[in-house]
Length: 66
Image 1 (cartoon, rainbow, N blue to C red):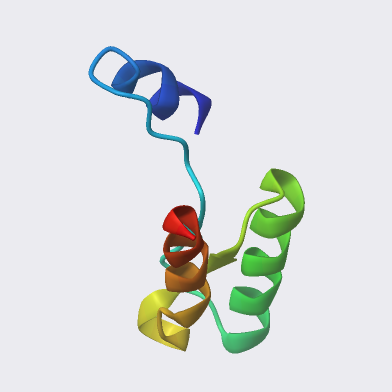
Image 2 (cartoon, rainbow, N blue to C red):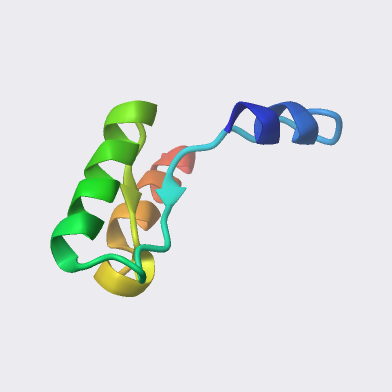
C-alpha cells in the first residue's frame, strides 16, 4: 500500500481505502481468514468482491465524498 501511495503521489494524492483480495484458491474458511488477516494488518476494510460481492469495498469508497 505504501509503495502504491508513494508512486501515485507524483501524479496526485490517492490513499488506499480498502483491500480487494482474490481468494479463489482458498476454501471458504481460508478465504474468511485471509480477509480477516488483511483487515487486521491494514486497519482497512478487505474482502473478495467476486466471492462475497462488493458491498464492503464500495462502502469504503462511497464514504470518501460524504
